[in-house]
Image (cartoon, rainbow, N blue to C red):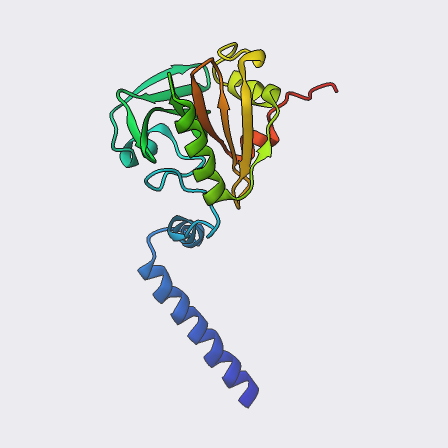
Length: 202
């Protein structure tokens, strides 16, 4: 009999607690998971670009964080957003370009048209200071990555002095000449880097 009474009291408490929680909640139990995801902080080693911009952000999120005025061009599932003027990079100025696939940021680039050899060497040293020792980069890989957003913009034979670094989260960073005096620093998301080649049927 005591067990039956204890069981009855437990059932009443469970129903009371359940109805109390239901009154406080305006949605389903899945809302709790959604709220947890919304307030979750990114991994400590997640790559941050400029003022907190992260891979996977959409153009509107990037515009909200990027202080420079930007112009946007879209075609099919690709969007390229570039600065209307120069932005400050280290001790120099550059054109800033963001590249999106299906509204998700996949690649970003600083372009230094008519850059000086001294600037190139200085930025190479600065990148090594931040990301560690550089490695030689394959020009064809850089061209393939860029072709995903702007086909035939680069010619492989003009990509020279290419160097690469890797950030803690797998972001690839490339510094290279793409013309006689034009060079760039390009940041590639780990997701794009893993899917750089179309391997269907291979």
